[in-house]
Length: 146
Length: 278
Image (cartoon, rainbow over all chains, first blue to last red; front, side, top):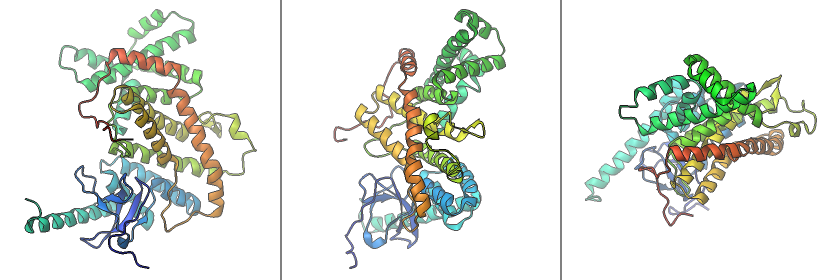
């Protein structure tokens, strides 16, 4: 049975999930908040947590340890380059969500080039930012915020 | 947090002499609080280095201190390392672990509220996850090459591979020790409650060691069986080593001295705990 629009899905706080973005349609990496049924998709302090609607097909994405151990188990030739990439990403100065987007992209595409991974992550972050801007503009036009 | 850890550690080990020299130059000028803390960490490390070196050499502490005072910066740094190494041997851990504990005691790390986190802690956790991956890779690749019970004979840090102490294990213990001591320090300064500090440490430990593969992928049965057994062992051994250091009497004594030099205070920008928090 399909979930109703308002049905929420619960995840362990702090884990990363993949979820559809309502405004842009992209599938984005986000981080579950401490409530377990909302997520953050930007590193900004004022980022608004959004509900994890089941209809947006949320699924756990893993984390740097999970991705690394998957390589240990299945594709050990990728462990060293992935770890080297992760160290650079963590030290990059980018926010936690953005650099984890880069690590996830590298894991998914088996491409451990720092510049390409970071470019993909920043592109995803930029789309999320643009989606939020569209949302805010609509709210402002509609008089939702005085 | 990573930069704080690195800064504090470098102040103690790499730029110890330069730190003191610069501190003297800045004595008449406006000295930043963070700089004072770094120098304080260096002073604490120096005190123990002198004590440890004097005991090892069978000399009076004032003799060692006098020799150190007149030595070159390079020699001073070497003396510090020698003292730290002696301390490490006494506690059967790598000196970097201890240095990081000291650094954590004085690092000004913003604490999260409730069940949340901070970017600094998140980045340190991700770094530790990467280190755990390397440790598991090494052990998974050499599985079956150890005799039963061999893990119990050596400590986590002392466990050797090809005759060399695993630098990855040392680094993992050092980083976790830094996080734990930073949390302890924040708790004593009133920036986080004792109960929340305990929960935060437990949460960080779980995050560091708990593998979370993508929902759509599964580990093989062989790896799952290996990790269920050895993963727990790695975690237990690492945390035993960390707790043994952070809770040692020596560290508590040094922490008490730090408290005298740098009065406990609540950082102006700390994220205070609300009464609603668990």
